[in-house]
Length: 84
Image (cartoon, rainbow, N blue to C red; front, side, top):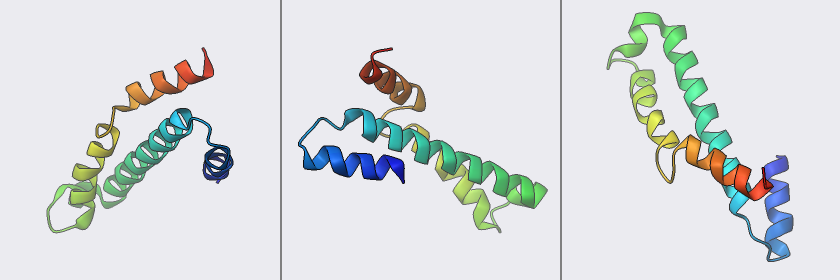
C-alpha cells in the first residue's frame, strides 16, 4: 500500500519514479515466487503434476523475476536511486 501511495504522490508532482517502479516489481515478483513455492509444498508431489494448476503457476511465476529486469537488476536500480 505504501508503495502505491508514494507512487501516486510522486506521479502527481511529476517526479522520477524509477525507484518506486523497481521496488514494486521486486516486491510483487518475489512475493509471487514465494506463494508458488508454498503452493507446491502444500500439494507435495502433486504440485509438480500437470493435473494441478499450481504446477503451471510455479513454472510461469519464475518469469516474473526475469522479465523487465531480474530481481538482482531491480535491487541495483533501487540501491543506485537510494545512493547506496
